[in-house]
Length: 300
Length: 309
Image (cartoon, rainbow over all chains, first blue to last red; front, top):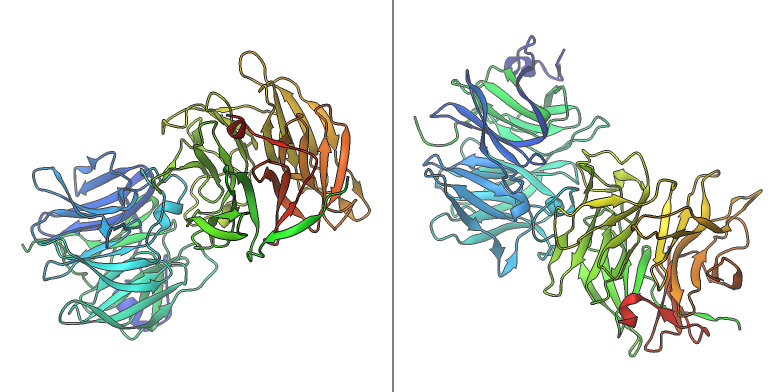
């Protein structure tokens, strides 16, 4: 069994006979997977291997960018441009369709930001990203500057038009993965160090308020709150000890998808968005599930 | 003459280490858990007003510090498993940190030679203290390593010792002909020694002379040298020992041949020591509990390449 149900509801979401298939392997430390829904391909990064990878069903994997300044989280904007949490570069940048790179954010109030880790784009085009400092602490960080300047590890909103940066939250210990609920009324943010998911109400202006504990993820198995996603029904999937934990929208723990290696992030993908691609250290695994995830990138 | 250790500053709430005199004040490091705690800092004690101020924050468990002869400040970033350079503009640069394609261990102490090469102790330490993810195992040895060119990120790192288990403190003699190394294992059968390695013509190290070996008693092993510095006569001034066993925490003054010239009891278990104050006759002592002590008018004058330049 590669999963463990704590509620009958879980088997409606993850079939009992679901298995992990290897999609691509041979990496050092992979992260930041995202599925381009319109064009049907997967992007992920090898942080330590310093490469952005692409996987197309059939042809398989190919290199998008190497070196990649140890890029971390990735997503697509509504024009289909890859938007990257540029971890070691300590910025957020966009890969233009012509292959050039545009820096979108590098400083907040005159101070260099930390090490952007994960990133999502809202339906209105605004970019939300987390800015923990772990990239500076990690063995192997190779950026030009290891000095931390901000006194907090924040969650930011980035307006891609005027490049203004709004601090949304400054009191988490280690904000990491983040995602919106399907209707974008809620935002979930992981705290890796404190082992919990925080949920916020999203205001009309895109601000976050009423932050509260959604769920805690404790356990002795390797893994911690890192990547987080929701499916179309609002079920919450989050990496944690032992694999990917699944919660209903009320925060009840429905079950666990036991990944073959420690999973740091994952994404829904495949033509019907009913596959999950798991970024697990050395290997991208794929599993078929019953409920589709949310499409990312330009509409079909 | 006896030394009187007085509290200069502290307590700082967690271990302090890495003392170096910057010409006007004493820099030292504070270590805290977790590694991303703001309490990981370089502090600066100014003896003219007794004030301690922040020199750097967010230092990721930097322990040992050292100046080059031209005044560039380098540090041993324990949790980050790398040497770093603290630049004058407030930025911090990672230096080359791989040997043979592998990440080295956890650097603890360093010395910069006149060619700007950095010799450093690279004990194993506990990798779990670092911020995740730890995907790189420790090396299969714990050695003195030497970084060839600190300006080049891909500069080669060379292994200098092949007979060490727990290198803890490192010094180069004034003529750079001798490398003094403290081995300070916490294992009952591990080495707790002060060694003198000849630096050979080709830059490698010859066979060491054992200058001092720390013993054991029914209470357990006597703690070896945690940190050390040089005086202007070429003596090695070292802090060693603890209350658990043996003669208790002491500062030793060893002649270059290893004769124990003096011992001075210290108020508590020390982590490191350095000479400071304008005439370099004060010995500063950092401790595990986070107290900074000093003994004025020690009758010795400190020597470092930076201060002599």
